[in-house]
Structures are given as C-alpha cells and as structure tokens.
Length: 322
Ligand code: SF4
Image (cartoon, rainbow, N blue to C red; front, top):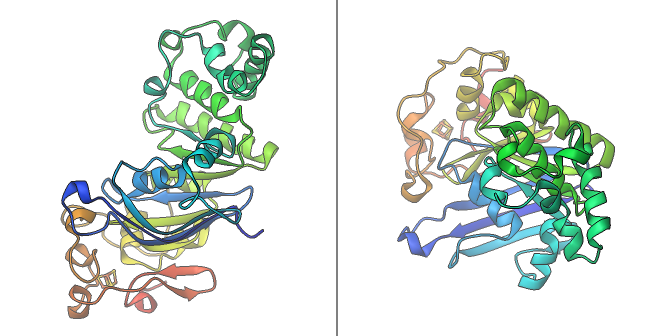
C-alpha cells in the first residue's frame, strides 16, 4: 500500500470547551510504510489533539467526522475493544515526559515486559524479552539496569525505556509526541538517531509530533504543517523546507538557522499564534501574514496541490518566490 495510515478530512469538535469552531478542521495527510511523517505546529495548533485522535484517546465528549484509516480499517468507527487492541500492538506511543508514563515503584524491566505478560508470556519469558528490548533501545548493561527503578535512570535513559516498552508489541506505527523536547541537545540527537535506526531495522512507520523544525528536518520524510487546527502545507520535508509554498512555513523555516531556505523572510512573525478555539476569519494566518490581502480575511483557502506532491492552503501560493 501507498500509506500505512491515512487521515481523511478529520474534523474534531470539543463541545465541552464551549467553542463553536472545531479544534481540528478538515485535516488530511498520510504516513507511508517505513517512513516518518512529521506534524509541526506551535502550541495550540492542534498537533497533540491530532496524535490523540490517531491513537483513539480524544477527550470524552469529542465529536469527530472524517476517517482515520490504518491500512484500510477506519479506526474512528472501530469499537472500543478493537481500538484497545490496536493501541500498543499496532500503534504505540511515546511522550515528552516518560516519568509520568512510568510507574515509579516498579522495576523498569517489569514495566517493559508487562505488555508481553498481559498477552500470555510467563514472567520469566517477559523478563528475558524485556532485557532484549532494553538492549535494542540502546540501554547498556540492560540485564542489570532492568532491575532499576525509573528514578535511577537519567532522562535520556527513561526515554529509551519508554521506547523499549513501545517496541514490545511490534507496532507498525510509532507515534512520538515531542519525544526529545525535555532532553538536552546531545541526548536529543542520540534519541533521534536511535529512532531512525529502529525504523531502518524494523520498517516501522513513525508519526512524529514536534514544534521543533530542526528535529523534523533530521528525521521526517514528509511534513505536515498545522496552524490553528488546519493543515497549511504538506509535502516531502526536503522540498518543503527548501522552497516553502505557504508564508507560515516560510516564516518557520526562516526562524531556524540550521534549516536552509532559498529565501530570507523576516525571521520573526508579528503577533501570537491563533487559537483554533478563536480562529480568525478567512485564512487563519491572515493577521500575521506578510502577504495578506483583502481576500484573505474573508475567504478560507482550500488545501490544494500546487505542484506534484506539494499541497498548500494559501490563495497566493504560486506567488511565493522560490
Ligand atoms: Fe497569507 Fe493570504 Fe496566503 Fe493566508 S491565504 S497565507 S493570509 S497570503
């Protein structure tokens, strides 16, 4: 298949917030087998909500339309029992803060082996497999470290333990929400290298959520840029960063010195990011956009293919200098 995961026209409303506007509005993108798709956006862009929707953990009362297809199965209409089976086994997740996901009073090895225990392995088998998984996640002396508690691990080692746990079910999709944000830069680079190596050896797909374009430029094959709950641009990472087709992506790329673009737009954008709960009319980016014209304040730009494989939601995508 062309894609492992396909999100089609996903719209999510959270009536509990009192907002009439959807937090995610008509979002579509895909993740290819064995490849990484990066979801990038500022806080409030809806990227974490999108990750939660994919893994089936939206807040209670959320109402969704559209489809989330894993291979060809729509996870939005699948029953809760099926979704629980998908979680952990086919889609696993790692978070920014492994400490909150790990049980402080249980040895690391036991936690890593828990999935296998729940699925019929004996304690001895699960313990042995856990050591193997910790080793794959790059934890030295895993046999001994499996007996440690989370507080005896450094931040980077805890993230590796989380990754080991995520690998236990042999997932075809790993969802990583800001997996390196809490780590210092060298540890960050090592974790990203690990994720790439694991992907190479197992052909696992990844959906990586981050606000950090530098992280994305190293790891993602494809990028989806979110702004105020909508996709403003998507396409292959390299091309997208080299020649953005949306003023917002252009500004993002220009603000990261390590990401080289052919243009030199002012690095800082005026104003604060728009919230999807109070989305500006027309193009949600118009209050901050250096290219905005009258039409932008009233007419919502459709996401359209502006070149092969390149999608942009800007009325004037063709006028953006290359
Ligand atoms: Fe800017 Fe208008 Fe394009 Fe929106 S549609 S990004 S406001 S030029």
